[in-house]
Structures are given as C-alpha cells and as structure tokens.
Length: 119
Image 1 (cartoon, helix red, strand yellow):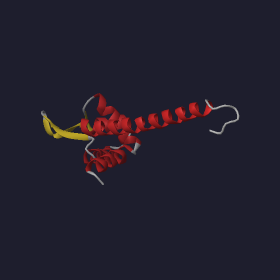
Image 2: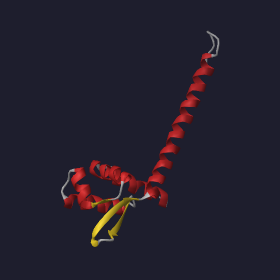
Image 3: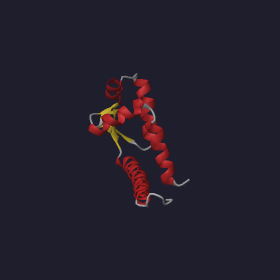
C-alpha cells in the first residue's frame, strides 16, 4: 500500500466517529482548546482528549501551546489530509461521471437502432 493510500485510510478511520467529525467541523471555523471542543461536541474532557489523539495521529489536527500558558493546548485543522481527501473524492466522482456518461452514450446508441434491429 502506498503512503498516500495509508494516509487516506487514516483520514477515513479518524473521520468514522461522529464526535471526531464534529470536532473537525468546529476546527474548520477556528482553532480551539480541548475543553472548549469537549463542551461543544458534548463529550467528557477525557473522551475529547482521546478523540484529539486519534485526529493528531491521523494528521488531521495539529497541537500548539498557548502563548499565555504552555499547559494550554490549542488545536487546529491541518490542511494536507483534507486536500488529499478532496482529491480522492474528486477523482472518484469523476470516475462515476465518466461511467454514467458512457452508459448514457450506450443507451442513446442503442435507442438509435431501427425497431427490428438488435442493439
């Protein structure tokens, strides 16, 4: 398996959980502290820490220390994994568009035959 495929698998695995998807949605708006994410997502702080660990390990989020207190961690959404995901989705969608276009051409060609002809 290529590194790109493994990275995509990690992204999908991380996004499989609704709480992690909600955290990603919130981080797409602005960087946030773990406690703030826990409150907004509706999970216990310890549970949010576990979710954030999965998101960090998958590369979806980054962690920084706050300037005012090094014990405070600020989480941000990382752009690269989302870009890989967008490209994969676009490529997959294009495959469907191509297949549907070919099917439509096949139907049009078949319907163009005379009444007694076989397609």
